[in-house]
Length: 180
Ligand code: IMP
Ligand code: MG
Image (tube, helix red, strand yellow):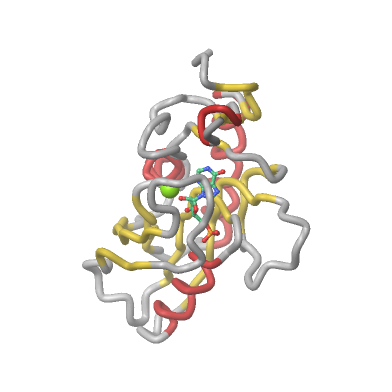
């Protein structure tokens, strides 16, 4: 285990099983359709790559770049869209693929922005849903796991752009992101 990690929250095996069963659910729910799996870069890149291979449908993929955290361990509360999707979203079945639902600023902003482009349907698949003890402005339509309010890295999730390549999800040691 990486020495900056306090403990492993979800192992590679648990992740593989959860993503596989989520892919099977989406395959059933979208039977006869060709959804677009919209990856919110960069955090969702690993989840997106695994999820698309667990879906047995003629789906398409696209990418949107959004930033809310910058180089800190706290959401800035504002979202910047740095790259829009290439595909024309109008009349398509869109599934937004997001790494983690934290304050939900990212997802609620994206749902609002993408709805204006008149998709046939718009749903969300999140890898982790963090329990902040508050009611969030949006709920995920599909999710793999719940998590407590701790700072997590791995499986695409970063702190200051590091740890994305860890194959598991771990709790980052506090001393890594607090100064004292
Ligand atoms: P939200 O807009 O507050 O829901 O935050 C969503 C984004 O913040 C995610 O897409 C992540 O990139 C980032 N984020 C939130 N919590 C964590 C975490 O525990 N570790 C790493 N990134 C996180
Ligand atoms: Mg991030």
